[in-house]
Length: 623
Image (tube, helix red, strand yellow):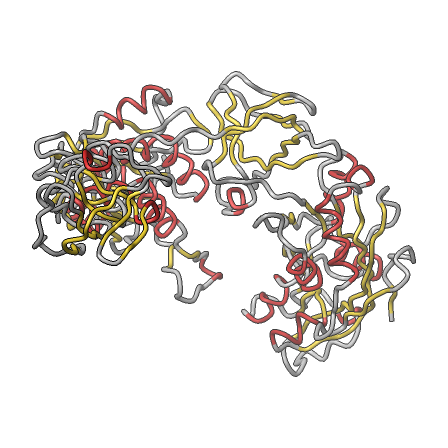
């Protein structure tokens, strides 16, 4: 009998939101010093314990006097008043203003007894000890009376106020040194799975180890939502160890968030722990990505189990969990920032679940927004870093046509799509070029290293502003070019004595670039009889596999081999061209790209050379 559990009923997204909101996450009230209150949410109404100011205060530098003594005064008919004293801010007045007298006073000083107005020094002249007042005043002129800012007993701030520098100033004026705020909910962050290794520790790729992406990612998202993340040790797929850790976390935190071990696999045990030690409310939600979501209760605490894939985990957290944390912390829901645009390429979907499609946004030559998918799957972290937001697709939607209008929900109101979008080959030359493009109002260019074949296809769909490619006849305008030396990357000392492509027998473990890249095509041209070998996605991946001992030979660049300390057997050179989309030549960002291309230096990159004739052949030259 299999231990595998099937998803019996997928909870609709709307119902799941209500269930998570009903978990009752309540961190309570906390008294915090005013110096630490910025960004916190006031839990109770605060009334003014005193008048501000607590005295009649001079609002200008000048002379305190009786307004009735200035009747009829003007520049041509000044009133003469003898000065009988001086009052500075922060000291008690030692003079009284009698009829026909004045007292010199500083801004912020206590108005002396007998005075009911202050004339600005600019509206007076001196004549020995006599001041010539050149304007008539009314009672209260130049004075902020006691309690004019706020009076004792007045409602200073209501509950629910988010404290910023403005509110901090008011509270400081009232002498309030600590304030009652909504406590931040403490959220336990637990990653599960035998394959996970903490960030900073070495990986054993032969056993399928990967770094724990979710713990730091979800902790950052919890803090952004107003929670207080508390990291717990990683736990493997062991029932007893997981039960002990979840129980301890539920006793110490307001919400327990785990990631991984939530699916219907026989080795995923979290749902069994919740079923046996608490109450499992939800197992599976009708959304993609994020189907294997758990919601339950552990003792008196709330529990949510996020999927293990980073995109699924962060998507379900953002949609379903973050609102509950904000509510518990007293934070309002942020304004949803959306953009309207047209799909640049068609996209097909499997119907049946609400789908959140990660997308990027660019503009065409006329300034109209184009939306393109960047989804590499739920396990790819770049599905989010290369995206600006998501398009929510209804469960019944199966197809989005190119040119169809869509609404993009940005990841935050701060997201600003890049002004320049490139695609194509990868490598140190490309990275150096991108680094040298001046940002557009703080926005660096975005570059999707999808390989030349995919880039050319997307250029035909008018998506990118430019390509970096080794292909000929792309249909674009070549802006510049460089050549790079490529060949076989071997261990230091070349222990297998590989000297040419003919030495690649079936016994040699070979790894090369994936199909669709320029280096893959160059190798295919030379190596009709070479072993097929494994593939790696980037120019450096084969070299890394040689370093790790998982390959004997990799196809790569001289620049890569020298940088990582490996041997190199040259096979040829390849030219890469920077090609501009003909419809984007007038974009200001393309002008900055042109400046970067013209000033690009490849000095220090082994095997690289600038090519002065950009329209020359891009075919690989072999040795």
